[in-house]
Image (cartoon, rainbow, N blue to C red; front, top):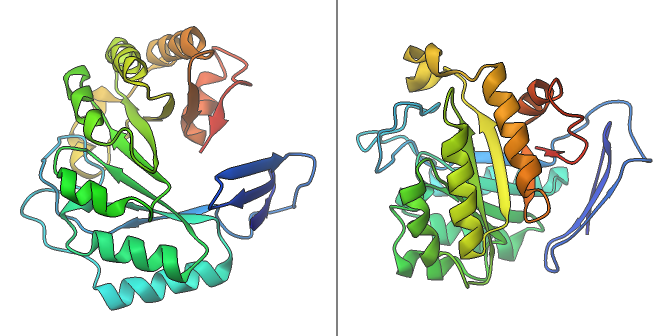
Length: 250
Protein backbone atom coordinates (compact mmCIF):
# COMPACT_ATOMS: atom_id res chain seq x y z
CA UNK A 1 0.00 0.00 0.00
CA UNK A 2 1.50 3.35 -1.09
CA UNK A 3 0.52 6.71 0.42
CA UNK A 4 1.44 10.13 -1.01
CA UNK A 5 0.34 13.31 0.76
CA UNK A 6 -0.10 16.34 -1.51
CA UNK A 7 -1.65 19.83 -1.38
CA UNK A 8 -4.65 18.35 -3.25
CA UNK A 9 -5.19 15.53 -0.77
CA UNK A 10 -3.97 12.12 0.36
CA UNK A 11 -3.58 9.46 -2.34
CA UNK A 12 -3.53 5.78 -1.32
CA UNK A 13 -2.90 3.06 -3.91
CA UNK A 14 -2.65 -0.72 -3.67
CA UNK A 15 -0.99 -2.08 -6.79
CA UNK A 16 -2.19 -5.67 -6.85
CA UNK A 17 -5.89 -4.94 -6.36
CA UNK A 18 -5.90 -1.61 -8.20
CA UNK A 19 -7.59 0.03 -5.20
CA UNK A 20 -7.09 3.80 -5.24
CA UNK A 21 -8.36 6.11 -2.50
CA UNK A 22 -8.28 9.90 -2.63
CA UNK A 23 -9.00 11.89 0.54
CA UNK A 24 -9.11 15.64 -0.22
CA UNK A 25 -9.71 16.52 3.45
CA UNK A 26 -6.14 15.49 4.37
CA UNK A 27 -3.62 17.80 2.71
CA UNK A 28 -0.02 18.94 2.96
CA UNK A 29 1.20 22.50 2.50
CA UNK A 30 3.46 21.71 -0.45
CA UNK A 31 4.33 18.99 -2.95
CA UNK A 32 7.01 16.74 -1.49
CA UNK A 33 7.17 14.29 -4.39
CA UNK A 34 5.17 13.44 -7.53
CA UNK A 35 2.56 10.70 -7.67
CA UNK A 36 4.08 9.08 -10.78
CA UNK A 37 7.31 9.40 -12.72
CA UNK A 38 7.26 9.31 -16.51
CA UNK A 39 10.30 7.64 -18.06
CA UNK A 40 11.12 7.98 -21.76
CA UNK A 41 12.76 4.61 -22.38
CA UNK A 42 13.90 5.49 -25.89
CA UNK A 43 13.83 8.34 -28.40
CA UNK A 44 13.18 5.86 -31.22
CA UNK A 45 9.67 5.68 -32.68
CA UNK A 46 8.19 3.94 -35.69
CA UNK A 47 6.30 7.15 -36.50
CA UNK A 48 7.46 10.69 -37.23
CA UNK A 49 4.53 12.83 -36.03
CA UNK A 50 4.68 16.56 -36.68
CA UNK A 51 3.34 17.38 -33.19
CA UNK A 52 5.80 15.21 -31.21
CA UNK A 53 7.06 17.09 -28.15
CA UNK A 54 10.04 14.72 -27.93
CA UNK A 55 10.91 14.93 -31.66
CA UNK A 56 11.05 11.13 -31.69
CA UNK A 57 11.60 9.33 -35.01
CA UNK A 58 12.77 6.01 -36.51
CA UNK A 59 16.30 7.42 -36.77
CA UNK A 60 16.75 8.37 -33.12
CA UNK A 61 19.03 6.11 -31.06
CA UNK A 62 19.06 7.50 -27.52
CA UNK A 63 17.81 5.03 -24.92
CA UNK A 64 18.33 4.03 -21.31
CA UNK A 65 20.97 1.47 -20.50
CA UNK A 66 19.31 -1.31 -18.55
CA UNK A 67 21.52 -1.12 -15.46
CA UNK A 68 21.14 2.66 -15.21
CA UNK A 69 17.39 2.35 -15.64
CA UNK A 70 17.19 -0.17 -12.80
CA UNK A 71 19.10 2.20 -10.53
CA UNK A 72 16.71 5.03 -11.34
CA UNK A 73 13.66 2.85 -10.71
CA UNK A 74 15.18 1.61 -7.47
CA UNK A 75 15.53 5.21 -6.28
CA UNK A 76 11.96 6.05 -7.28
CA UNK A 77 10.76 3.03 -5.34
CA UNK A 78 12.70 4.05 -2.24
CA UNK A 79 11.27 7.57 -2.60
CA UNK A 80 7.81 6.08 -2.15
CA UNK A 81 5.97 7.38 -5.21
CA UNK A 82 3.00 5.41 -6.55
CA UNK A 83 4.40 4.22 -9.85
CA UNK A 84 6.22 4.70 -13.14
CA UNK A 85 4.85 5.29 -16.63
CA UNK A 86 7.05 3.98 -19.44
CA UNK A 87 6.92 5.98 -22.66
CA UNK A 88 9.23 7.24 -25.37
CA UNK A 89 9.54 7.59 -28.26
CA UNK A 90 7.75 4.32 -28.67
CA UNK A 91 8.33 1.99 -25.69
CA UNK A 92 7.66 -1.14 -27.74
CA UNK A 93 10.81 -0.29 -29.73
CA UNK A 94 12.89 -0.42 -26.53
CA UNK A 95 14.65 -3.83 -26.55
CA UNK A 96 14.32 -4.36 -22.79
CA UNK A 97 10.68 -3.32 -22.26
CA UNK A 98 9.48 -6.71 -21.07
CA UNK A 99 12.59 -7.24 -18.96
CA UNK A 100 12.35 -3.88 -17.18
CA UNK A 101 8.60 -4.27 -16.61
CA UNK A 102 9.11 -7.70 -15.07
CA UNK A 103 12.07 -6.54 -12.97
CA UNK A 104 10.16 -3.49 -11.69
CA UNK A 105 7.08 -5.54 -10.78
CA UNK A 106 9.07 -8.23 -8.97
CA UNK A 107 11.61 -6.00 -7.20
CA UNK A 108 9.66 -2.86 -6.26
CA UNK A 109 6.23 -1.82 -5.05
CA UNK A 110 5.74 0.55 -7.97
CA UNK A 111 2.67 0.50 -10.18
CA UNK A 112 3.57 0.26 -13.89
CA UNK A 113 1.88 1.70 -16.96
CA UNK A 114 2.98 1.89 -20.59
CA UNK A 115 2.03 4.61 -23.09
CA UNK A 116 2.22 3.58 -26.75
CA UNK A 117 0.95 4.56 -30.19
CA UNK A 118 -0.12 0.92 -30.51
CA UNK A 119 1.18 0.38 -34.04
CA UNK A 120 4.65 -0.97 -33.24
CA UNK A 121 3.51 -3.57 -30.70
CA UNK A 122 3.16 -7.19 -31.78
CA UNK A 123 0.73 -9.62 -30.16
CA UNK A 124 3.72 -11.48 -28.71
CA UNK A 125 5.24 -8.34 -27.18
CA UNK A 126 1.94 -7.38 -25.62
CA UNK A 127 1.42 -10.84 -24.17
CA UNK A 128 4.82 -10.69 -22.47
CA UNK A 129 3.70 -7.67 -20.45
CA UNK A 130 0.70 -9.43 -18.93
CA UNK A 131 1.12 -9.80 -15.21
CA UNK A 132 3.79 -7.08 -15.05
CA UNK A 133 1.89 -3.90 -15.93
CA UNK A 134 -1.41 -2.63 -14.59
CA UNK A 135 -2.30 -0.34 -17.48
CA UNK A 136 -1.53 0.30 -21.13
CA UNK A 137 -2.51 3.67 -22.58
CA UNK A 138 -2.84 3.98 -26.35
CA UNK A 139 -2.39 7.42 -27.94
CA UNK A 140 -4.92 7.81 -30.74
CA UNK A 141 -5.04 10.80 -33.09
CA UNK A 142 -7.34 9.53 -35.84
CA UNK A 143 -10.60 7.54 -35.59
CA UNK A 144 -9.25 4.97 -38.05
CA UNK A 145 -6.49 4.15 -35.54
CA UNK A 146 -9.03 2.80 -33.04
CA UNK A 147 -8.64 -0.65 -34.58
CA UNK A 148 -5.23 -0.98 -32.87
CA UNK A 149 -7.07 -1.21 -29.54
CA UNK A 150 -8.26 -4.74 -30.35
CA UNK A 151 -4.89 -6.37 -29.68
CA UNK A 152 -4.65 -4.78 -26.21
CA UNK A 153 -8.17 -5.62 -25.02
CA UNK A 154 -9.11 -8.70 -23.01
CA UNK A 155 -5.73 -8.98 -21.31
CA UNK A 156 -4.60 -8.80 -17.69
CA UNK A 157 -4.22 -5.03 -17.64
CA UNK A 158 -6.47 -2.01 -18.01
CA UNK A 159 -6.59 -0.14 -21.32
CA UNK A 160 -7.04 3.61 -21.70
CA UNK A 161 -6.90 6.06 -24.59
CA UNK A 162 -4.85 9.26 -24.69
CA UNK A 163 -6.14 12.17 -26.78
CA UNK A 164 -4.58 15.45 -27.90
CA UNK A 165 -6.63 18.59 -28.49
CA UNK A 166 -5.54 20.69 -31.48
CA UNK A 167 -7.20 23.77 -32.90
CA UNK A 168 -10.27 22.61 -34.77
CA UNK A 169 -10.06 18.86 -33.96
CA UNK A 170 -12.61 18.53 -31.14
CA UNK A 171 -15.05 16.74 -33.47
CA UNK A 172 -12.29 14.22 -34.28
CA UNK A 173 -11.83 13.52 -30.56
CA UNK A 174 -15.58 13.00 -30.23
CA UNK A 175 -15.51 10.32 -32.92
CA UNK A 176 -12.48 8.62 -31.31
CA UNK A 177 -14.32 8.56 -27.97
CA UNK A 178 -17.42 7.13 -29.63
CA UNK A 179 -15.50 4.35 -31.39
CA UNK A 180 -13.42 3.53 -28.31
CA UNK A 181 -16.55 3.23 -26.18
CA UNK A 182 -18.03 0.82 -28.71
CA UNK A 183 -14.96 -1.39 -28.17
CA UNK A 184 -15.32 -1.27 -24.40
CA UNK A 185 -12.67 1.36 -23.56
CA UNK A 186 -14.02 3.81 -20.99
CA UNK A 187 -10.91 5.63 -19.75
CA UNK A 188 -9.68 8.79 -21.51
CA UNK A 189 -6.78 11.12 -20.75
CA UNK A 190 -6.82 14.41 -22.67
CA UNK A 191 -3.96 16.87 -23.13
CA UNK A 192 -3.82 20.07 -25.18
CA UNK A 193 -1.23 20.58 -27.90
CA UNK A 194 1.75 22.78 -27.04
CA UNK A 195 4.10 23.99 -29.80
CA UNK A 196 7.28 22.38 -28.44
CA UNK A 197 9.71 19.86 -29.88
CA UNK A 198 8.88 19.10 -33.50
CA UNK A 199 5.56 20.88 -33.00
CA UNK A 200 7.26 24.24 -32.40
CA UNK A 201 6.71 25.15 -36.06
CA UNK A 202 2.93 24.75 -35.69
CA UNK A 203 1.92 27.48 -33.26
CA UNK A 204 -1.25 28.03 -35.28
CA UNK A 205 -2.48 24.58 -34.17
CA UNK A 206 -2.62 25.49 -30.47
CA UNK A 207 -6.23 25.30 -29.19
CA UNK A 208 -8.28 28.46 -28.72
CA UNK A 209 -11.37 29.25 -26.62
CA UNK A 210 -13.76 27.68 -29.11
CA UNK A 211 -11.88 24.38 -28.88
CA UNK A 212 -11.99 24.34 -25.09
CA UNK A 213 -15.72 25.10 -25.17
CA UNK A 214 -16.36 22.28 -27.67
CA UNK A 215 -14.30 19.81 -25.65
CA UNK A 216 -16.26 20.73 -22.52
CA UNK A 217 -19.49 19.96 -24.40
CA UNK A 218 -18.14 16.60 -25.56
CA UNK A 219 -17.02 15.53 -22.10
CA UNK A 220 -20.39 16.46 -20.63
CA UNK A 221 -22.05 14.42 -23.38
CA UNK A 222 -20.17 11.25 -22.47
CA UNK A 223 -19.52 11.77 -18.75
CA UNK A 224 -22.02 9.08 -17.72
CA UNK A 225 -20.36 6.50 -19.99
CA UNK A 226 -16.66 7.09 -19.38
CA UNK A 227 -14.02 8.49 -17.04
CA UNK A 228 -12.17 11.58 -18.27
CA UNK A 229 -8.86 12.88 -16.96
CA UNK A 230 -7.30 16.09 -18.22
CA UNK A 231 -3.99 17.82 -17.68
CA UNK A 232 -3.91 20.62 -15.12
CA UNK A 233 -3.25 23.15 -17.87
CA UNK A 234 -6.23 21.96 -19.89
CA UNK A 235 -8.49 21.97 -16.84
CA UNK A 236 -7.64 25.61 -16.14
CA UNK A 237 -8.50 26.54 -19.74
CA UNK A 238 -11.84 24.72 -19.53
CA UNK A 239 -12.94 26.43 -16.31
CA UNK A 240 -14.21 29.39 -18.30
CA UNK A 241 -16.71 27.08 -20.01
CA UNK A 242 -17.66 24.76 -17.14
CA UNK A 243 -17.24 24.31 -13.44
CA UNK A 244 -15.07 21.28 -14.42
CA UNK A 245 -15.89 19.69 -11.07
CA UNK A 246 -16.52 16.35 -12.77
CA UNK A 247 -13.00 16.19 -14.23
CA UNK A 248 -9.92 14.58 -12.76
CA UNK A 249 -6.60 16.30 -13.41
CA UNK A 250 -3.37 14.53 -14.08
